[in-house]
Image 1 (cartoon, rainbow, N blue to C red):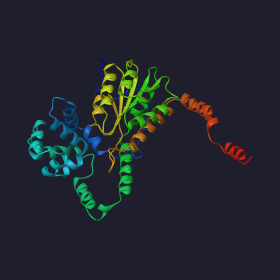
Image 2 (tube, rainbow, N blue to C red):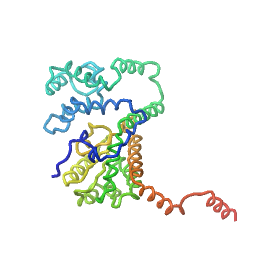
Image 3 (spheres, rainbow, N blue to C red):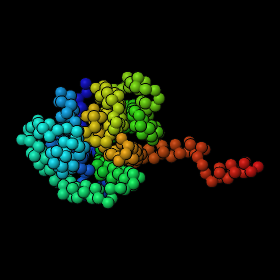
Image 4 (cartoon, rainbow, N blue to C red):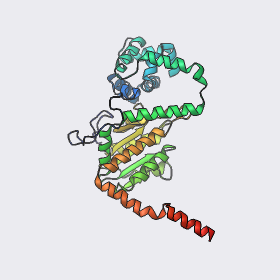
Length: 340
């Protein structure tokens, strides 16, 4: 098996000394990384991720670790009874979980989380105020308004969490001599198809693993994956078990594996070498694809700008399909034929 880097805080795909100087993607360079992402990268967050990835840990403890990684701010704002209710567990189980981490109890766990979050998050009291305000007269806000506000928040968090250096390194890997595989099941299959469509002009060998057929067909397309190849897998709640299994298979075969998923707590993040996080919470749907599309487009744009030859390729592609595109002249000609 190929020796791989720890995900996701390992060095970029290329050595930092050889990577180009790329500004972070986010528009405000001094803003904090999104709260859940920052916490997941902290020492305590890494311990929680280790518990989450350990199949020998009890299902209940893994569920608590998952909840804390996804809701670090709320976990520090709630008391033990409220946290237990929202996490679907008991206060006694929470206390035992804290001791698994080497802490004296729930109070010590909450204090440790607050200390980790202090440098990167808004104060907990501000969160309490926002939560109380939501319970007031604004609680009846329409589902459409809630959905749009949620989408805006997801986009903001995703942009702040993107790392331009990692994107540039990944873009270079995608244009290497190996085969690029793109995989997504269910709704993620449509996002994977969009990524494949954008990449096809720039990747010499490209395979959309789930273009048609089910899991067996997808596994067959990955049979020859190996060192020098890249697999980009997209999966969001509810996660596809097949996507996770096949990503592990590709990694064991020596391929570079990249996950585009909603959180570092995602099981796909543990299966891949590199993770691009696209926030996906939604007030009604199981997950939102808005930020995932943003990450797809950011990755493709980075690839297109990484080499002047890609600009030429984009021009040739436009010329090749120009006969099929609408122009004012073609529209006028069509109208004359209909009138004729």
